[in-house]
Length: 153
Image 1 (cartoon, rainbow, N blue to C red):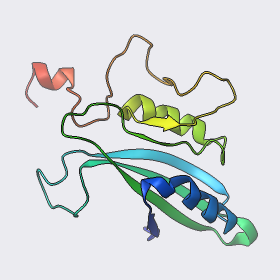
Image 2 (cartoon, rainbow, N blue to C red; image 1 turned 90 degrees about the vertical axis):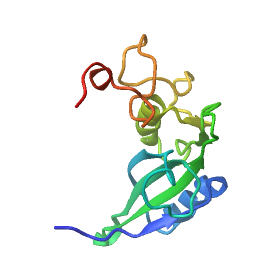
Image 3 (cartoon, one colour; image 1 turned 90 degrees about the horizontal axis):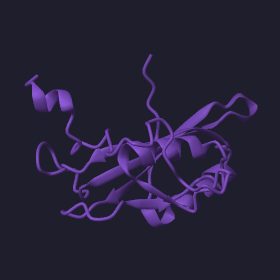
């Protein structure tokens, strides 16, 4: 069964404030945070008028009183043409401690930094799943998969 989930687009500068507002409106259950690599936007396929970058998306629920409403919150982090520097966005760990796992995974897989990240350890945002020796951001479109480099698919 497919449901339409409303999507709330916000400016990157309003990321935390938008989540604070939604939390005060009853969206107190943090489900997930992830990224979508749109760095090739406009180069191939339809352009939505947004600059190339990464969409950061959260899914929140309002579960009080059996309401079970949900909402997606999305913002676009722009990237420059040279890919210099890691894109950065404010952390949501001050609102939901559970956001830490998702932010660490997004940092590791997409190379996106979360300013003000605090999981209570004092270690800052760091790798979560891959070995310490692994270099690269495997969920970015620019990441070359070894299997594709050695053999055409």
